[in-house]
Image (cartoon, rainbow, N blue to C red; front, side, top):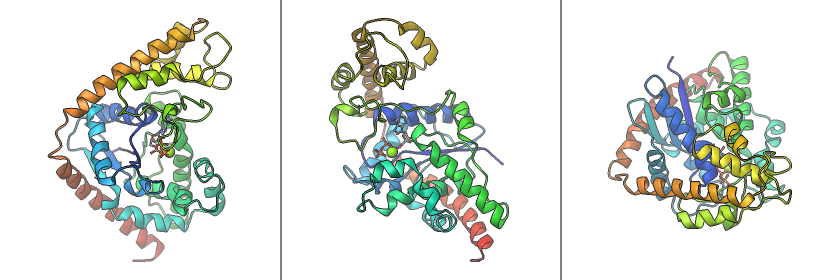
Length: 337
Ligand code: ATP
Ligand code: MG
């Protein structure tokens, strides 16, 4: 069976630099490296998007997201499948079956759920349940590699557990995705990537964080983005050191610099560690971010839009055919067919 690599980025809002460096760019690099021999499934998780409030229209956000992959350099061929989750009903249908084998206990331990719901009674059930939908997104296609940022690793582990539980209870049905440590190795990183919030660097950068200066959006003007880097929170140690526990702000800048240039982190750390001037590092990173956005935005504007709908429809025909076969197998196993 062909290997399947799969990923998706929620389109509730514009993407951040964190989404770009942690998920979009690694996926595009992997896709281009492997799409001759592996299936590359890139889907727009529009059903996931509606668990948060949505800025703009989902339809526009969907097209923008596809254009972002193309602007990031995604090369298309017959193995690359682009599709909208809501156009492939098996995702929602398998979710229900998996809901019936997932437990309240394991779901309640999901960190993203705790962070997003903040313990509020008014939090929607989608925030609680979306990791099961994510498991369905992955298991329908027997995907083994799912490049995501570090914040999603717990959900990959949940997916593995659900797949193993289902296989154990009903017989071999799903391919179990590889464990997260191996996922990171496959992505060529030592661990998961977690770009930090520029104002509160203990937290990850998130598109749904309200603060303007906390995050860099891919649509920010390059000047505005550079200013945000210059005013990023650092520390008062007065010496550059890579240490996410004690010095998350400065460490975040070193990480961003290494990812933008695809340079080993150790090399960037060796270049800067021990130096006293935070200002010089900030200027360097600000310049890197400015150039990245200038080039990315120019490529984005040059992407033709007239064939996007048909590209998605083609992907959806493929996705429906693969996922319906898997769903039928599942329904047979649980006794519904
Ligand atoms: P939201 O606040 O709406 O949850 P988000 O920025 O967390 O937005 P998601 O749509 O939840 O983005 O995640 C899309 C992808 O981006 C996932 O693979 C996720 O792991 C990755 N990602 C999100 N934030 C970061 C970050 N700060 N660093 C690295 N990767 C990230
Ligand atoms: Mg998120």
